[in-house]
Length: 124
Image (cartoon, rainbow, N blue to C red; front, side):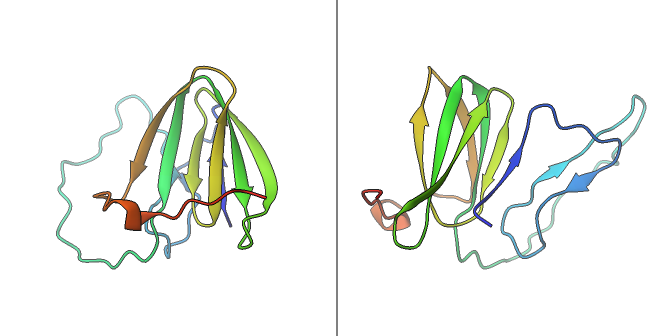
């Protein structure tokens, strides 16, 4: 699984999580009704080992093509994302082509540790 895309028009009446427990990022859809309450809480220290950086991108505005690359750095799939779409990049190579002025919000494990944090390549 290279990514999970949650389209802006996705709707459900129930809470849905789209990721397995083995992922270091969790992607969920949480609808709530007026008057619902989530009790105040805090998250406890819970040491985890993260083997692979996964990132979530929220397309705030614009349009972008995500290109997916296999282990040989060959392009095998492209996907168009538009305003309101959310993508969880799970693994593998990926690149982006901006089809118009675009604003993305990125959420991932930090901190970014510099050049050793990722490997760039020329796609085939």
